[in-house]
Length: 96
Image 1 (cartoon, helix red, strand yellow):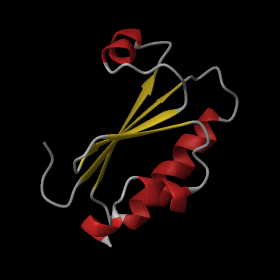
Image 2 (cartoon, one colour):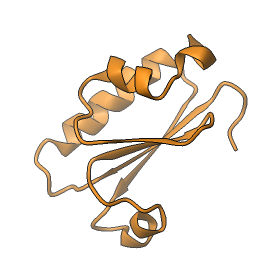
Image 3 (cartoon, rainbow, N blue to C red):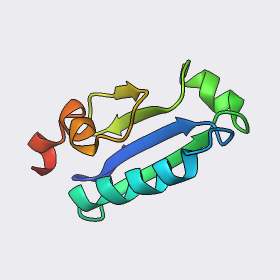
């Protein structure tokens, strides 16, 4: 469990996808701005860490999982709309 105010996200993706590196860096940057340095962000390449991928029941990439604050939520697919990610993960009540 994270410290109060922290946000933990895990991104499951495939490095074989061409835009993946840019998506990851842009996503980290945009979301970190919203939580003022309290973002804990893990990146999991499904090809090099299949055990972790299977254990967390990831069936499609990219998948972004909010671990905390609760409840756990997932977004699969397009991760370019940062405001939409923020809304779907309901961070406004926590950091808003």
